[in-house]
Amino acid sequence: MKNFLYFLLAINSLQSFAATKLPTPAVQNIDIAYLSQELAPPTEMLSNLDPFIANKGVEGAELAISDNNTTGQFTHQNFILHKFNVPPAGNVADVFKQNIATKFHYVITNLNAAKTLEISDLATNSDTLFFDAGTVDDALRNEQCRQNTLHLLPSRAMKADALAQYLMKKRWAKWFLVVGNAPEDALFATALKRAAKKFGMKIVTEKKWEHTFDARKSTQSDVSVFTQSDDYDVLVVADEQGLFGEYLAYRTWLARPIVGTQGLTATAWHSTHDLWGATQIQHRFQELAKRNMEEPDYGAYLAVRAIGEAATRTKSADLKTVRDYLRSPQFTLQGYKGNALSFRAWDGQLRQSILLAAPRSLVAVAPIEGFLHPKTELDTLGFDEHESGCHLR
Image (cartoon, rainbow, N blue to C red; front, side, top):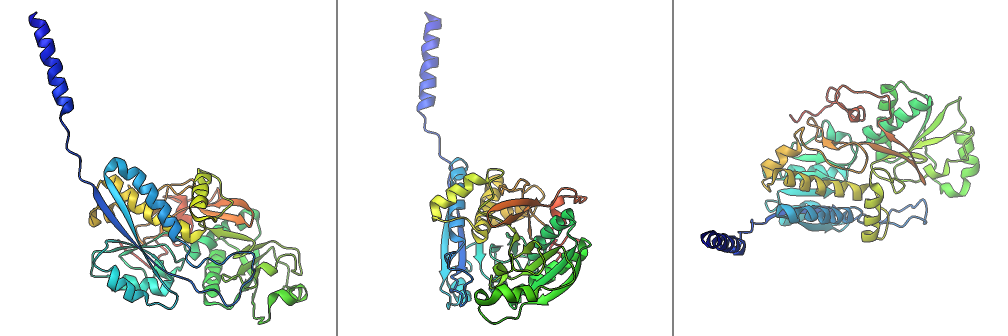
C-alpha cells in the first residue's frame, strides 16, 4: 500500500511538471536593408528576345529571407527585409541618409561601383556592414576597398582567370581579343590580359570594335573582314553591354570558338546549372519570380543567406559578433556550387566556384582540376593575398 502511494505521488509530480509552461525564449529580430537603383532601359538592345528586367536582385533577397526564417523558427530568430528601390533618376545617397543610415546594421547594396563606394563612405563612422551584391569591379577589391564592405559576386579578375584556366586545359593558348567601346569593356579587357599573362596565354591580336552602325544589318561581311588576322585558337570578346558580341559567332574569317562576354561565359550563376542541389533553388526561384535566376539575384540571395548563416551559428544579432564570424575561417556558406563559400580576409571577396556556360549548357566549373593552391584552389581565381592591393586585416 505504501509503495502504491509513492507511485501515485510520483505520477502526480510528473503531471504537475508537464503542466508547467516553460518560458519561451525571446525572439531576436534581425533587420536587413536592401538598397538598389532601378535600371533605365538601354538605348540600344541587342535582341528583343530577352525581356528587360529593371530591378534584378530583389527576388533573390526575398527567397533567402524565406530560407533564413525557416531556420529561424528553431533558433528563435526573425529576419526582416526592408526594400528601398531608387528610381533611375533618383538620388541614392539621399535615400540612404534618410531611410537607412543609423537605422540598420546590415545593408545589402545592388548598385554600380561609383554609388557602392559613395554609400559605403557615408557610413564609415557608423555601425554598418555592407554586402555588395551588384558589382564585379576589381578596383573595389583592391585600391578602393572598404573595411565595412563584403563582396558577393565574383570579380572580373576571377571570371577572367576561370576562362583562362579552361582555355589552358584545352591548349587554346593564342587569343584574338576584341574589345567594345564601353568603360566596362575596357575593365574586362584588363582582367583578361592579366589572366593571359598569369596562365601563360598569348594575345596575338587585339582590336577595338568601333563600328557605329547597327550590327544586325551588315555583320555578315564586316565581321569577316574585321576578324582577318594571324592564326589564333580562340576569339576572346569583351562586350559587357551585349552590343555586338552575339553577332561574331559563325561570321569570323577563321572557324574559331568564342569566349568572354559571349559564347562561353564565366558567371556566378546560370540557368543551365543543375549540380549540387542547384535544381531545387532554380525551381524555387522560378516559382517566386516567374523567370530564371540571374547573377544579381544570386548575389542578393548569398548576401541575405550569409547574414542568416552567421546569425544562426553565433546565436546572435549583435553586429560585432556576426561581422567577426563572417570574416573568420569558421564561416562557410552553401552556394550550390560544390565548394563551400567563404570570405577572403584581405579584401572581403566571397571566394567561390565559377560556372563556365554556353547559352544552353553548363560546360565546366572553375577552378579547373589540376590548378593547385597551398590553401584552397578557389584562391587560384582572382587576386590572391600577395597580389592584392587591399589588406583589411
